[in-house]
Length: 233
Image 1 (spheres, rainbow, N blue to C red):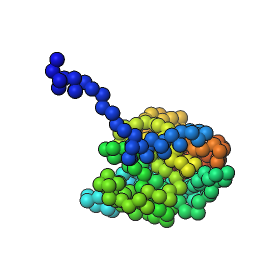
Image 2: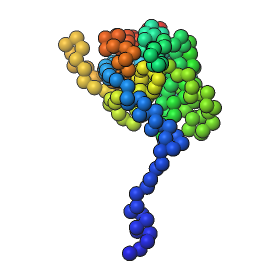
Image 3: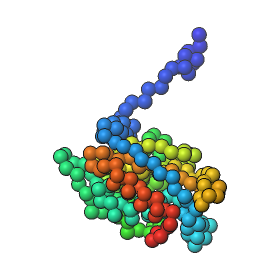
Image 4: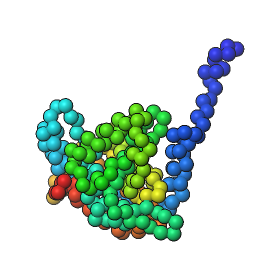
């Protein structure tokens, strides 16, 4: 038998070290938390209108997605819900004074989560520019270690992959993570009429040791309302 054929059929072993090992350890720690997942559907019509206006203002050289609009709404909502913007410590829950968002970035070899600091103080345009800069730096391996430190809440988006909903794993010691799905036209009944509306599903996963179901639901409902109205964004 040809030796090359044997080699082609052999399994490929990927050692759990480096970035892959770090991801494995972090995901194991996140999975061990008593987590709960909540989901809400969101009408994204006004977000799309806002994106169109911002895109026109930015010009053809800039491509603006829905994500920075969600980041802005999320940061403002976290400001009003300190129990969700918190870290689990030994025997204590630490409510953090600043809103620092980890943004999950897919790499060829795994996942990176750089931090947008003081996200609640930044405009949609600023968040968009920083998200692009962090993603580019993470993929090029040029971000310093401090760029990944100090996050208080994580956002993971699979919308570009066409995912309708998912439940991300907590990024310990944080107590909450938000999953962003794709925006897609769906049939919706409003006021007794059947409409075709751009909708998305927000998936919130939280650590039940730090926050209970009802306050977590109130947090998600406020985020939904903020996105559907776009007031203050």
